Amino acid sequence: MADGGRVLLAFIEESTWGTTPASALKKIAFATAESLSGDTSTVVSNAIRGDYIKPQVIRTDAQGGGGFDFELAYKDVDDFWEGAFRNDWGAAKTTGAFTPTADDAANKYTRAAGSFLTDGFAVGHSVLVSGFGIAANNGYAVITAVDATNMTVSGLDLAAEVGSGDEVIAHDGVLIQATTPKSYTVEREFDDLTNKFIPHTGMRVSSVSLSAQAGAILTGSVAFVGKMPGVVAAATAGSGAYSASTGANNSIMNGIDNVTGIFLANDDTLFTAAVTYNVSQIDLTFNSPARPIQALGTLGPVAIGSNSFEWSGSIRVYTDDTSIALFTDYVNYTEKALWFRYVDTAGNAYLFYLPQVQITASDGPNSSGPDSDVMQAMNFTCEYDSDSAALAVITRIDA
Image 1 (cartoon, helix red, strand yellow):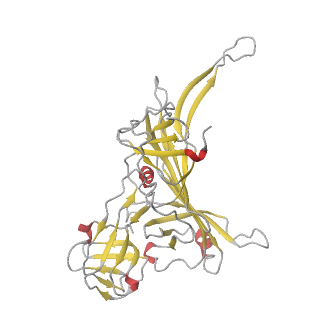
Image 2 (image 1 turned 90 degrees about the vertical axis):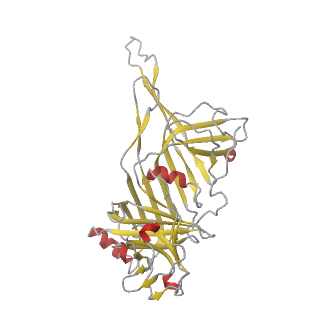
Image 3 (image 1 turned 135 degrees about the vertical axis):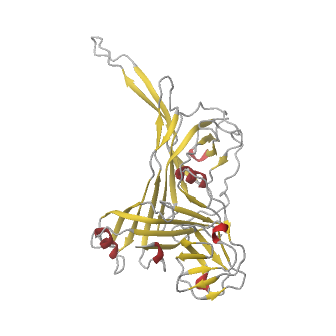
């Protein structure tokens, strides 16, 4: 009998939808459960026979779906975030060592030589700044305005300083929504059976979710729509010869050690300090619905269409003198901006920038009883931000 602890998940991005490339598949290091499936649609005949019997069950369609859950480690499932965003991670950007000036009045970095634009920086990118003598000028920031010689940032409260020539501003790639669908072959290997594999081809990501809770591991899930899975066999190229996940050696993140900054403000230029109230949970859902396209004469989808992005989330906070104002923001329909980061023990970081979010539901400061904390749970939806041309931007920074 197959044991659940002996199931391996591996994947490869497809160049042609539904066709597995000849390269070895890559393992997913920190999957915790899977629900990959083949779904068959059937219809029962309505023929009138005179004996109350419906004589046949007819198959009318078949497609693949389901998904998997994971624990978050740096770069383990980044390929599937590309699928949800319908785009590739951008290239790393850096100024290299240069001599900027930190302007405390405008909260910006200026330079006399070179160009931030030529270096590839844009509004919405998060960056790591290093090399300044004054600690306030170093650290994580998000770019709110940029031209060739000026980079205005939020998330740091800059102090006046002229650089020494050792300063560097950099990141290791950003992910922003685009319009190019991606597909994957996702395969299950039953390692305690003999050469038993189930390849799922043509799998388009329909959603990726992330959850950070105090006192828990950071977790997530990926859901797919694709072709009906293949017959159980060692059929796909590279089956069983899986390469390691890019993030296999990175540490799993948790809600205490690795959530290092949460900024929530009415405007992204006001990220001067992390929130002072206590947040117990942040959830994100990058819902990028994929729809099967059917045609006469073909079992299963002939293609997978892409629906509009529906990106949303929720935040749960303890009620105090400061956080109670969030309910006022909900009542007044006040737009917010959200920026937060996950940093693992080695220093690898994800920075999530949601430049415009609208609180769409809140149950207000509620008490569940005399021996409970008064909590506020708020749902929000991401809006399009014209400055960054984004619903959300994720930035990676390598240790």
